[in-house]
Image 1: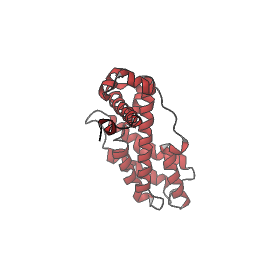
Image 2: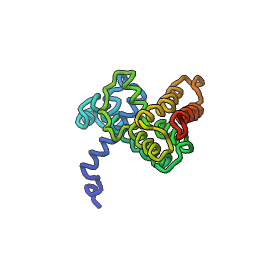
Image 3: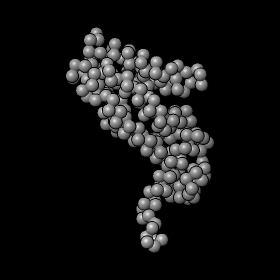
Image 4: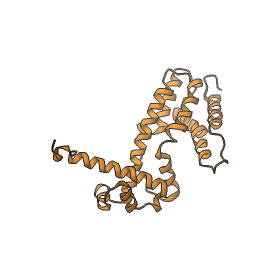
Length: 209
């Protein structure tokens, strides 16, 4: 095989460079914040020239949006998998909601840069990414499953979207606040998830009201 034949196709190399830039940008933005990150640092981490970064993304703002878009897509895919595996349509919510909350809070979200990027947007003036399509919004995905439970008589959730908002507020929102607290100052995350799930089931359980 000649050296020319051994090289990846040009388009393949371009995709590899794009992915390397996105990976580097994710790391630099997360470590340095939006304001502190520079295209020079991202290019150096990716092992490409600054011009290559601009050729692929046009600048710092669109690069940030591209990373956020990719991380959001990864999160949504992981959340879909968590719903299907931990919260199947034939599950008993009383048994399945807490394992689902644990998986999402401690694995799906905790291992995703999505949350870190949302914090950057909220606190450091970073550009916002595109809005999620309705069928890819995390609360909408959960609401669809809660609607299944309501129709099967396993929950009383005539407004599944509002029920999903309540579940997220009682569990994930409080859990993330605890994770953000200074070391040693935060509450036990699993206790938050247990208490939040219990409160949700008292409000929305099939025998509630």
